[in-house]
Length: 496
RNA sequence: GGGCCGCUAGCUCAAUUGGCAGAGCAACUGACUCUUAAUCAGUGGGUUGGGGGUUCGAUUCCCUCGCGGCUCACCA
Image 1 (cartoon, rainbow, N blue to C red):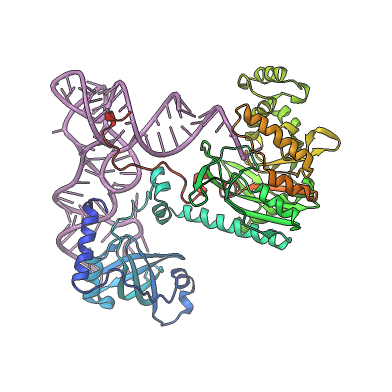
Image 2: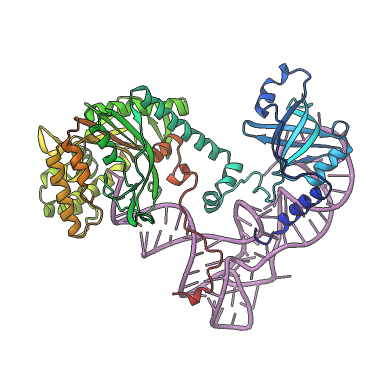
């Protein structure tokens, strides 16, 4: 504890006074019999029975010999009516002089209605359950400071009701997703977070070290390669919900650790997966929000299937005016991109240029949209289209102008996979650090035969953003990653 | 990493051209037995993110460091 401020010192003094007079400020047991909401809703059928409630004290309205104060618990809140006649002089004095806003208490009393008709508890006994030493923030402005909201989420949850709702809905979305997949025969598994070779995406990994093994390990950037090994092993439908880690910049859409659901369905292709995504997201929205319509960043979004399906090429052409298929060579494409008023870095590859075009297209994809048929150079793990080997059987799904999922018919030819790893290795030699290292064991697994498979990755955080109308990914992550605060950074002019 | 913006009492926010750092809530003292943003009277509370500079004088101007937000870049 730092040097206590004025308000903390006052509360500490109360705590000590209570202890000195034999009142334990942090007793072990509570005797709660009812939730606040139950009493409020069923007041008229409860009759004359004493109930015991427990929760946090709100702002008191002190009338002298009567004090009104809200009691807030996990179910809602109820007004406590604390009057001299019922509570007694000692109890009332205890409330006024020893209890503070934010204290956690137990209130025993008779449910009743005040003259204004408000459901209340006529309190006959008050007991302290936990003394709060910090006062809660402003009673009606709540906590606004974004940095404190993220760093001290417990305070944010305490005083900003919408925040709790977002995380409750997040929990509903995830549990509904599990139920949805379990019901369809998918098996949930857990694969390693610490990996000797990371793969399954183009991203920078976090590096760590195992002491006993004296070995470098990486935090996974995807679950893909382990899940596909399970398909080889005969688990035909498999999924994992878990954290992936990418050592890259943050933004309102990017967090260094984020939650992804990856699933793989044997004997299915990307068309089957598309149907699954539509249906699953509708189900999740229905269960979490009670509706398949939602609002995100001021846009009304209708999640009802079927969703729009459009080849990547068409979508990009429509928005940017550039038809990349007409520019098979990098120079000509770069010129076309620049002509469309979009920045094209010198030395950018064709894949990067198309990516740049997609970045400009993405914000326009408000209603749920599948973009399909990605060029093979953008999709190292996807199977080629039989009708056009320059394209892959792949789609990405966009809702509210952000990408929430990526799927394809999985590459299961070990020779082709070997080839693509070798190309990436060559790329790596050339200095591109975002490529996947060669995973010999994975190729070995494919050599035993992996069924034709449709695979999917859903960014849970982003999906929750859309379904809860949260503008930033940090708003759907309970404890977003923040730079550690050094309490004493020393003289600033002395350091580098 | 670049650009822009921000950091003032426990919380939410003010402060004129560079001229005594303020309000509401919270806190403290008192009054009030049906209030619900209770009301009324009074009181205390500040290293203005840290450090340095310019100046008679800095919340304000300059430099620097820290933290955050947005954005661009990187990246799914």
